[in-house]
Amino acid sequence: MRILVVDDELAMREVLVDTLQAEGYRVAGAGDGEEALEMVVAREFDLVLLDVMMPRLDGFAVCAEMRKRGVTVAVLMLTARGMVEDRVRGLDCGADDYLVKPFSLEELLARIRALTRRKTREDFPDEVEIAGAVVNFKSRLGLVEGKEIELNAKEAGILAALLRHRGEVVSRDRFLDEVWGYHAHPGDRTVDNFIVALRKKLGTAGRLIKTVRGEGYRLEEE
Image 1 (cartoon, rainbow, N blue to C red):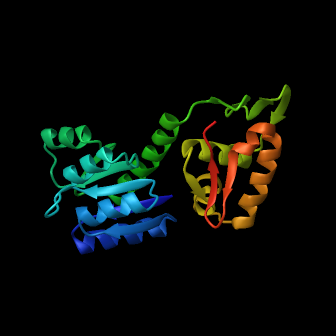
Image 2: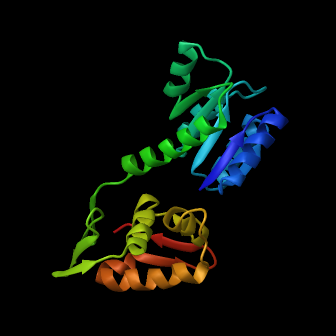
């Protein structure tokens, strides 16, 4: 999981970056809103920890501009401002959650886990159809060209990741983060081997999984 920490206070930013890295997350930092906007547009992140009180471009403006540009990454706002109207403003501009300073690191980590679970549930249905192939992610069973198939946990996870990012290139590192988990990185070839098996099980629909040389894989629109 990739997290961007945005805070103009260097000490706070370093504490958050170090803490999250110690938990196994991949973390980058930004010192102001303009830098944060450039980073979320150019790079893949799963979560942005966004301070509100920043010079030039505050967190409210950053979040609103992200949503305006179609960036759907989860946003957790961090601020010393605890007024109800500020929380409402943050949520209205597109934030997913709001945490008031001072906060415990245990609560921050719990909020991150909760946001991750929530986003996964919101973004993804239990059953999908891809070019005539039907797959149920609860049972991991599917029907492909009249035949029943069964996906193992990793194959189902890879397919889910491709569907969540449909039309986008999904890097091998991202598969490893989302499917294997941030504590277990078995190697790029492992992803390739599972892709080969998944394509075979999906039959004709498997042809929609395209290799993007040097970058990863993309599930094309039908």
